[in-house]
Image (cartoon, rainbow, N blue to C red; front, top):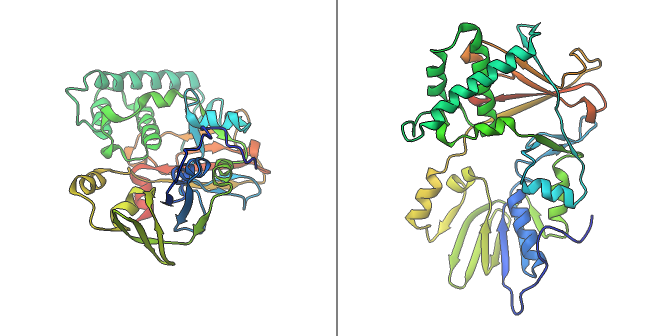
Amino acid sequence: MSRIWKLHSKDKPKGYLPRVVVVGAGISGLVCARILKDSGFDVLLLEARKRIGGRIWTDHSLGFSCDLGASWIHGKWGNPLVKWCKRSSYKLLSIPSGRIWFYTKGDFVPDYKMIWNYKGTILKMFARFFKNRSLNGTLTLKEARSLIAQSIKPHELPLLNWVVELLEAINGAPSYELILNEIGILELFQSNLLIEGGYEKLLQEASYGLDIRKGVVVEAVEYTSRGVSFHTSEGTYGAELGIISVPIGVLKRGIKFFPPLPDYKTNAIQKIGYGGVLNKVVFLFKERFWPSPHQRLTYLSASYKENGGFRYWADFSSVSPLPTLMGFSNGEAAISMDL
C-alpha cells in the first residue's frame, strides 16, 4: 500500500498541532483521520466494532470479494469516489449491465421494449408531480403511486410497482417515508460501478498507518475548555479536540455528552432520519439457470404488497468462481424481516 495518498494537499501547518481523537472508523471517520494525520496532527481513531468500515463490509468467505454492505458507486459523473479510484488505479466494473430479465411467477416476459416504454411513461407521470413541487411539498412516494395507479391500465401496475421499488432501494427508505420532491428520480438513469476487489480497497488505503483501536465502545464524552475525555469500555482517552463520526442511530441513543449538547444540536440530531433497511442475500449455483446475456432479474407483480421482497437480483458471475446472484430486499418488506 502506497504511503502517498493523492486526494488532498500534504502541506503541514507550522507550529503546534493538537491531539485529536476521532470516534467511528467508517469511511467518513477514516478519511477524516487520514487527512488530519497527513497534515501533521497526532490522531487516535476509536471503533466499537472489531472491524473498520462501518456499513462497508467486503466478505471473502464465498471465494471472491463480495460487498455485503455498500456495493456500488452510484453515478460516475462528478463522483468523488470515482476520482479516488482513478487516482489509485482501481479498476471499475459496470456490473450488472445489459438487459433485465423480467419474469412473473416463473414465466419470462419477452417484450423488453414494451416494458421499457411503459417505464418511461410511468416516470413521466412522476415528473408531473415534480413540476408542481410547491403544491406537493409533502406528497410521499406512496401517495403518488396511488394517484398514478388510478390513471393507468391494470397490466401497467407491475411496472409502476417496479419503478417505486427502484426508488425505495436507491433512496434507502420505504415509500411512505420518501417525500416526492426530495428523492432523486434521475438516479434511475445513472451508471453504477463496482470496484474490482471490493470497497475494502478504499478502507485499506484510507486506514494505512493510522492508530486504530477496535472493540472500544465510547459511552460518554466529557468536554471542557481544556480538552475532551472519551469514557469507553476500555478506559478513558484524552485529547485536545474530538470528532464524532458515528451512525446517526448511535448518536441519538448510544453516547452521552457532559455537559449536554445545546438544544439546537440535539433537536437537529433527533430530526435526522436514516430511512429504512436494504437487505442482501448471495447465492452461488453449480449451474447457470438464467439466460446468459442477462445480468439482472426482476420479478413483476401487480400486488404492491409484494414490493421489496427479494424481487431484484444482480448477476455477479463475472467476478466469482461460480454462477452467482445477489438478491435485494428493501422498503416495508425489508423492515418486516428485521423485526
